Length: 122
Image 1 (tube, rainbow, N blue to C red):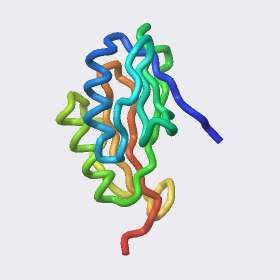
Image 2: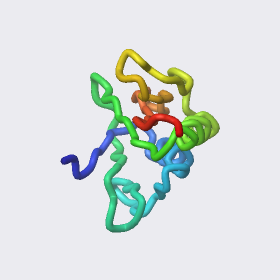
Image 3: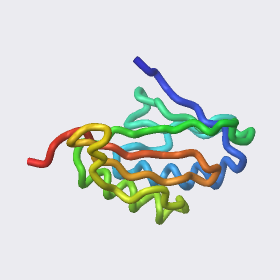
Image 4: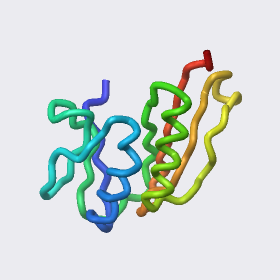
């Protein structure tokens, strides 16, 4: 089980703004500001961190699980509004599995950020 992920970013202010907007539809908020900035769904669930220092090579791919397809769409849209660059609009990726619905953006450092729902529509 993964406890947390930390990305190194070139501009902590820019990346913090991007992720604050992009992750809001998932219930995430910025809870810790300092040498590293911590995001989570609560102060006891800080599982995503940003640390100044420049992105590593190769840049990691991070996927955020969404409760439903509407949340994928909302997070993808929020990420674009917050400065992300389109990497693939939300769609079903049947090559992965028949219900894999995901959208992808590049964050300000070029990390591939994915919002995904594994559930079939009801």
